[in-house]
Length: 338
Image (tube, rainbow, N blue to C red):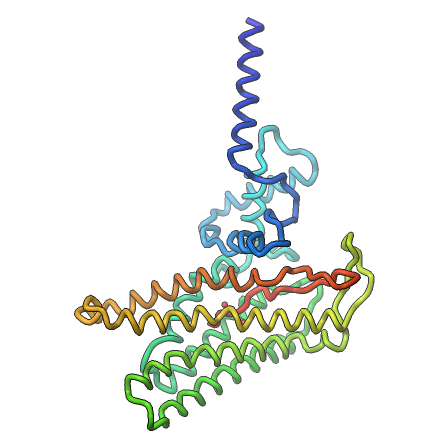
């Protein structure tokens, strides 16, 4: 009987070990990323987790269970048998839904996991052909408004910023986006050398320079103070050792580049792809399919571009002697997600 019990116990232990091994999950670290942030691939995997739209469907009960599991881990009261995979999953759920500073639920359309589902209709609107002046202004305004709400909902609440700074960045982005989009459309309309087909094709690419310029304008207006004050500099152990204006310039440049790179595939690839698909027999025979097909193309481009763009640079950049912190924009805007 003792041998049987020993065998059963060993089998159970082996099964538990196999279950843990099969998940291939790294050892859990509370508050730390699951994937290495030193490589582009690690950052890409990390941001795929952050923007995972499946977390939008997490129930209130599942959220409470995830939060409680992390609390148990923090206080050393974790029940036996909890795997690393379960802990990583719980942390993913909590970080996707609750603000890290206030622990309050973020409104669903303004979560990072909701950026693609709720932002894609705006992208489709930005890329609609034959837009009027009113529709151009509306979609650019809506895009910048969505980006502003996402940025505000995910702001750093430990260092409150005056509302005037957010308003300034928002107005600057809206004005620059609308003025550039309208101006380019007017120039294209007045270009006599363009055939109607060429004019329509060129107009489809107008949203990109408008959105990219608005993104850069937003970054400069929101963070220009860092150029004068500097940003925090940390040592190898994460201890604050001072501030650096050089680090601030470096961070601002990387952020601006990210905001320019993000809308590029979102607002350039779909028009190029649609210009080819529209010539197919299927879409010419069924023009009603144009909008659904364009929506799918935009969704695919958005889903790929967002994690790629925000993975370009690590959140912690190393200088010659000391690493300095850099805040990756919580929501680069695809502008459209700026």
